[in-house]
Length: 460
Ligand code: SAH
Ligand code: SF4
Ligand code: F3S
Image (cartoon, rainbow, N blue to C red; front, side, top):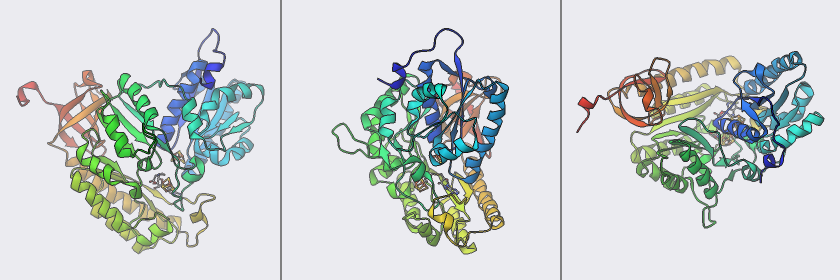
């Protein structure tokens, strides 16, 4: 039985309104959905307008300084709103900033009623009743994802045909720049059976594509039916057997955890989409060593080659950090060279942001901001050029597109290609929820345009 089931339901009257603002990675998106699931039995229904909300949750990210600072400015605005509503609004801070600096949040912003870490949000109902009596509870310093997943309601209020599913939490890698091992705790994998149950119920609700989530999702080693650890590849094969689940993706992967069976699956398992987010951070061996990435440039390039041998059309994406302490122009050029060699379909790149408590923050030779900014511009220009080339190369192809939602034009629908690009198609609104062959007519910077193939042109 979950905590929520033991609590009194709300009486008659209007439903209470819940507003959740999500920052950071997909794991936070999943957690925000689950927070709404936990609060639904208490009578909370989601609202899109913060002014209407009885309960506001900021689900925060601590990865870079800017992300963390945004929380305090947002809280400043919420304080004013709360005053205007004569205090009739509960404010919670969840997520990685809550975990990392919960006490500071409470101290800096008295309007905050409660702070809850990423492994403790299943306790929200209980926390809410307690804060109704007295402010100031900070929950979550301990890491126990197992308790969380056991306590979460089985039912997910999922809408749409794609869904995230967290299978792994935490990180043991301790890259010297990164806060995640401190905010999310040690690596832990959910058991196979629990994941299959959740995936089956998603498929029953009409979900056709799931993205398996974890900070190091390919380090997945959850207990299988016989109690022995299962790899992510084995999990993917089992998921592919679920009727209705046609597409499987996973993110984020670490190059060192790319097992042979997972590489092979990219060539053999049709449901596994030909897109892989595989961050490398830098192309310089010297910087990779300082980052404690535990692999070099050659190993990464070799991995990419092996993946492309089994799946030649695999679209690759990555994360890059520029201006890591001690990065020279030659180190940066090594990153540019690696990017030219790999040819990414899309990528994320960031200026290094020193994070309190991480080893890199106190390393010497911090790179001046102007130098990092200029390097970031050069890297982003190259990555954008590659993205444009990749998108343009799809023109003329016929691709299976999973239609997800209505577009802006009348009867237009937006779907996803196997390579994760958005595809805009006219007169396709009736096809939402279906996977349909689409002729790609143009590849643009951020999306593709396609057309349905008239019956008269279809091969018999
Ligand atoms: N677990 C994933 C990524 C987690 S964080 C992995 O290992 O790849 C997402 C991305 O944020 C990282 O890949 C990195 O590129 C970036 N990042 C993390 N810490 C950062 C920092 N201190 N400054 C700038 N970017 C950072
Ligand atoms: Fe952070 Fe490195 Fe772990 Fe990724 S692998 S979450 S970058 S410490
Ligand atoms: Fe941010 Fe936490 Fe995700 S720090 S990137 S929300 S794991």
